[in-house]
Image 1 (cartoon, rainbow, N blue to C red):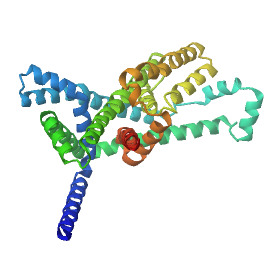
Image 2 (image 1 turned 90 degrees about the vertical axis):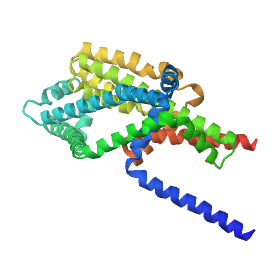
Image 3 (image 1 turned 45 degrees about the vertical axis):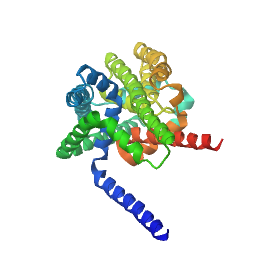
Image 4 (image 1 turned 30 degrees about the vertical axis):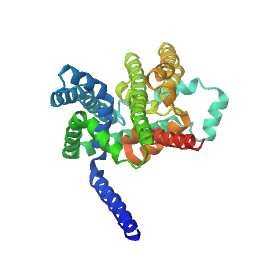
Length: 348
């Protein structure tokens, strides 16, 4: 009996060590594998339909599903990223040039402020418009310099990016083709009970759909509406501001209002009343209400996490995992809630 116990512990330890070693081996391209799994889950309903139309031919259906992912997700994302980097670089090049002056707008803004606000700015040492222009230009320059630096990094790591993209597409094909068999093997290998494993798997798939299809779709809609509105109003770098609003829309306690509200206030204070009122109307009546209109249909009430939990998990995910964190953070939070709900149900 004692020998069997030692053998069992040794076997489990070996399984854990080999699994950790394999995960460490995959770590450099974890993002490619993550997005392959996400795309496989999101496009799996389409794959099942294509599988039925193709007469059950697995390879053909997987190839068609992969082509759909490339056309609907990969190519548009690449075009958007290239346009965003180009616009950020162009804006960075304009900052600090002789034609980039904020003094006139700041002077008009200062003339409209009440005396107590001007006194407060003077107390804070912000009444010198030329110095304020220098500070604003410096902040904008640092922001654009960071974006330009990231563009250089992307350019220098083109080979790694291509390899990661190839791995993602390659794995995605086999996830489409062999997905049900892989899921069945994982369920059999799980040390949990069948009911717990099934519910956790279902929750994982639902959390991926809620996080990507729900939160990301809503953020893209809000950012697109904001960017198009900026473009129609003649505000420079509309694509860049739209992308920023998309990113901020992922944070429920912050949102795209951090961009369009200051711009609307600036337009009103500088005398552009028509554009300022129109931007405020679009922001309040359209951008701010998109979340309430779309989230119940895309996410569902049963999967809606508290806003504070989404905020903390998204910020924490971004800090730990970079841009992939906006998916990993809420996904971990959703699984955390699901597992604890299972535990509470078991205690009752």
